[in-house]
Amino acid sequence: MEDNAFFNLESVSGMCSSIKAAGDFDFLGLTVLRPKGTTISKDLGLRRVTKAKVQEPMPNVWLSSYLVTGAGAAKLLKCIKSQRQNYASKIIDRVLSQQCLSGDKSINAFVIDHHRFFGHSESGGDSRKKLNSKRPSNSTR
Image (cartoon, rainbow, N blue to C red):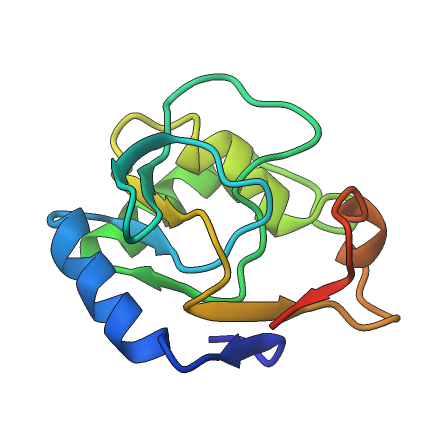
């Protein structure tokens, strides 16, 4: 969890239930902006990220509350290394969503499509705030 993640009453139980429902996952985004994927569990809001070309507005971003397995970490690093990016001008959340979660077929990625389990906040100085401004409010709790 990053410092801009908020725990809610359902955080632990929702996370544990999502882990069980996802099964053999590499990446599990516990709160994302613009969730996109095939519904696995409507009650949990669990979606499997679809492997397809994505563009702006970028789906499945916000790397503040997520789980990655050891094998998933190795796959993510391999994916990121496969196409060099200039992170001085690109936000890693967006690169990861486009290049790895949606683009790399070897990465078994899931996201939660609501903010009941975890919240997220972007401060005034957060460089992602401008890019993610296509949502109704700047924070969800």
